[in-house]
Amino acid sequence: MRRGVGIQAVQKHTLQQKQLQTIGEQINQDSVNKIKDQLVVFKENLEQFAIKHKKDIQKNPEFRKHFNDMCLMIGVDPLASGKGFWSQVLGVGDFYYELGVQIIEVCLKYRSSNGGLIEMNLLLEYIRKMRGKNSIEISCDDIESAIGKLKVLGNGFNILKIDSKKIVQSVPCELNKDHTDVLVVAQQKGFTTVSIIQSELKWNLERTNSVLNFLLQEGIAWIDDQSTEVMYWFPSLWGNSFEN
Amino acid sequence: MTNKEATAFQFPVYYNKEPFFTVQPVLDTRKKQFQMWRDLILQYCSSLKIYELDLLESIKSNSILFFNQKINRRLSIESLKLIIQDIVDNGYAEWLDKDKSRVLILWRKPEEWASLLYKWVSDCGLANSILTVWEIQNGDDSKSQEFYQLNTAVLMKSLKALEKQNKAQIFSSNGDDSNLGVKFFSV
Image (cartoon, rainbow over all chains, first blue to last red; front, side, top):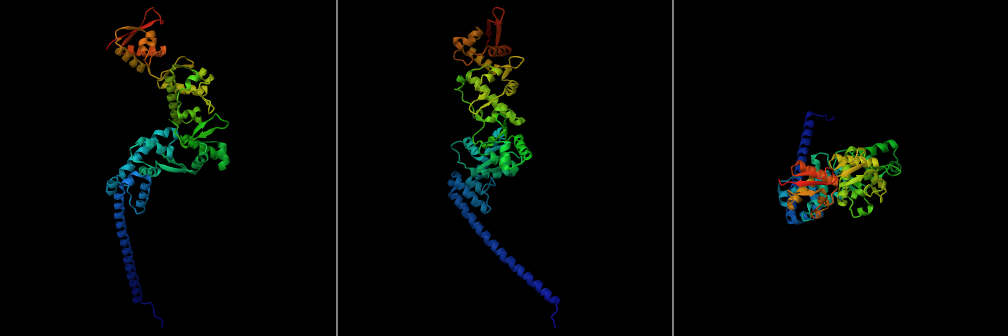
């Protein structure tokens, strides 16, 4: 006789399932707790490490970068707040806050001549000059971190990679791939023309003109009509200051 | 203005950038560009003590200020007119004729000259005495002053500014403009 599927069997099956689930949850909970414990220990060690190497973190930009990376990996953000243990020990909250303000100042100052694009190295040079000789040494990584923090304020700041150059964008206009492609082409000489774009990127005239016009309207490009073909120049790619 | 004199002048970096010599079509960029041109022209004229520019003459003679031989870029006469008009609008220049072919460059505004003059008069104890315009420009007392050999038109504007402040009075000794004198008052 075939054993029918009785109500008891069904009940037994669900019970088993439930028990298995509870055990499963327990094991999960245990391992989560274990990891949490480990993290607590790790955080403690990290804090001790931070206290011990406070000076290096403040003075050595490369060391600071590695430390920040390590912190981010375990979900500690020493830059996020101006209060609390991290900023008390390291003063990093203030450090990046201050740097952020300096970045904004420099970008605004040169916005009208470069259209809001500035090369990372030039920005770094200006900020170093602004901070003076006796302040904490800063690196490009610090600027990137500070810009990351500035993103909280909206989409104003961005870092573009143009070939090997990094360019900080401080205007909220949306640069798409076409725009950055033109910058890549122009990167080497600091200028480009309609025919260079057409031959390098294989675009038709309409697309070329529309992209170049956009860059012109946004103040990113300046034109020069004293050559055989109209040249579009990009002050942000010149590497040195246009203004001084 | 000869190009020889200009070699001592330190041109800004942007003077060596090609698009600087083409008037920019986008308004915001052009504003910035004109401001840069204004700074350059005023600084150049100030360091070489130039008070008057003949626009067409400057262009024709390849004045180094408006023609950068190294990058082979020059300002057109039309562009130069726009730039000078911008300087006039900002109060740092005045057209000398209706055709706008010549311009008086005021790298110091008359009011600024006026206060320099008045300070000099007070410091030298010349208040309440009479000086000729020629003496102010060429006299021994003013040799060390910035306004030594100051352009007559600029000087007259400055003296008129002092007159308005009741600090001086201009008069003519023989009824015409050839021999002008000025009396300074102590206030």
